[in-house]
Image (cartoon, rainbow, N blue to C red):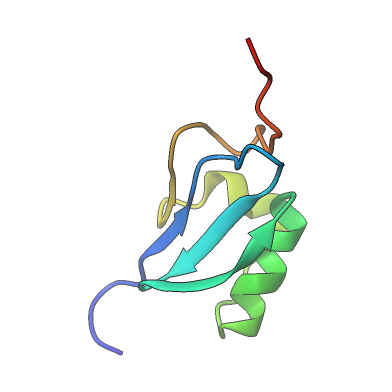
Amino acid sequence: MSGPIRVIIHPPSPTGGRRVRVDGEILGLAHNTTDVAEFLRRAGLEIDPAEVAQAPWIDWRGTGPDEWGPQPTT
């Protein structure tokens, strides 16, 4: 694979969890940073769960790593 790895953590879904994508491929629905680290490990990207929130190559969409849903209703 050439170029930088693109990891996107999508906004929390209405029912909870966040979709994790690597280079356009959906890896799964994570409910915490440990889930994200496991999905990335399975994709061949080793990262400690404690480092997921600060990794500069992970793009957190909508909100940061402290929000996992479900979204409150107004």
